[in-house]
Length: 191
Ligand code: ITT
Image (tube, rainbow, N blue to C red; front, top):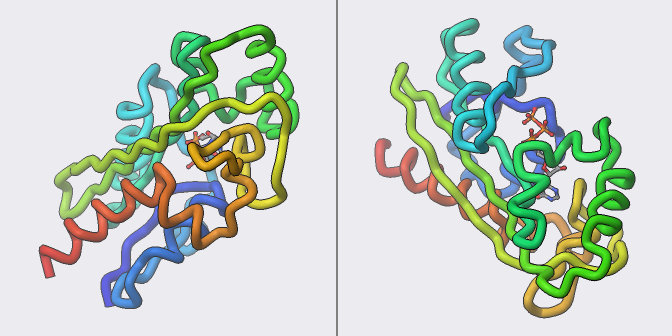
């Protein structure tokens, strides 16, 4: 059994990644190592913020760990909300974030967007990154009951929103799922 700390305070991320992990891997949460604080995210790119979170946990707690930073990048908004995805409308309220996005997208013909996830693994002090991208479009209304964040306004090529996919299907195809599969392959090849 390989134990690894997932440096995140987002329970949705834990659920989406845990469902993909083979039984030999066991995720420890931040509370399991006595880390109750918000993780620092002070940079302007997803890559840097991802690395910052894992580095913080590794340097403070000296454990093998991984973090992930993710965001929604909308073409017509020059890549916004990007690293500001969680706080786009000022706080962490997903509905207000989506309302602001739909408002900013009013009248825009180009509705192309992508979700991006960068996982940073720190194993025995060495850093590795794994990226996943999911392409889609921003809808004109919220649809669907599952998932979190911007899922109800992110429309897949088949017309469904991400919020209309159950957890296992989203995890299989999503930006997070793609990055997680790369992480699993890397860890499995080591054993
Ligand atoms: P940690 O930093 O503790 O991991 P967080 O929620 O602050 O958790 P991020 O800084 O990576 O995570 O912010 C990511 C935001 O991007 C998230 O709060 C959502 O608003 C959005 N997001 C990321 N992945 C998403 C997904 O799969 N579906 C919908 N929205 C997503």
